[in-house]
Amino acid sequence: MRKLHKFLVLGLLATALTSLGVFQAYADDDEDEKQEYSEHKGDKGRGEHGEKGEAKNLGVKLTNETWKTECSACHMAYPPGLLPAASWQALMGDLPNHFGTDASLDDQVMKEILPFLTENAASERRQETNKDGKPMLRITETQWFKKEHDEISAATWKSDKVKSASNCLACHTTAEQGNFDEDNVKIPR
Amino acid sequence: MVKNILLITLSVVTLASMNTVYAETPQQILDNYRTQAKTEVANFKDFSATNGETFFKNTHGSDWSCATCHTSNPLKQGKHASTSKAIDPLSPNANAKRFTEPAKVEKWFKRNCKDVLKRECTTLEKGDVMAYLMALKP
Image (cartoon, rainbow over the protein chains, first blue to last red):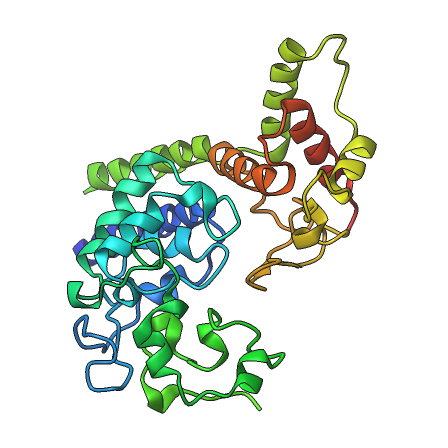
């Protein structure tokens, strides 16, 4: 009889948790990859990109749900390790003019995302400035990005399946998991 | 033990009902805009799906219209004009998640209106667009 009670309590608990989960997901957002993302495992540390001339894992196992939801609404959520902290600060400080679109966030959301970006950013050594002496904002304009991709032909960049250098996923099949390892690169033909 | 079961059942019910407070229906959100419009627009009667459709499909001084990304059939999947990322259908009649969170609705109206009109939308414009999206039949 005791066993039966235990079973009932556990069952109810499971129901409670499930219903909570379902409701939260519903009220939360339309980002269906959330779960899959947070479940990603097996990446080592935050690592540096291009340290030995090859793309490293950018450590988004240190994921942040708010970052994932907000920053992947219009494009892939670019891992924090792709830019140094000063660049993230400048970029997040001007979201109403985010590369031609308004991507403004409220203060509370900003407080959840900005520290995640700066704390997991690329090292200060990689800080680059543009012509105006301001922090570089476009990942694809940084020297290391250009160096990493110097073997890619103009035709590949322009191909229908790539179109833009910001389209990591066109070739880096595991980019959304923060994994830019060359083993997972498939350049579309 | 029976007490425990009762307690858990109660918490389930309470939590479930608490959560429904966050999620509103498109109709509730539209009703709130209607109440607001009455205070803002002289002789306001109701939102117009026809006006909403025109507003949605026309440009307003910039390159983009709402339809540029959401397509001229908001029951279908759209595509971001700069990034090409897929956008789930905007009409709540094709996508039950749409227009269920007032804060999210406001966030995206604010952003997208800035992109399309270089200003925020009026309550009348938002209500008309919602009326249009809610009138679409899959």
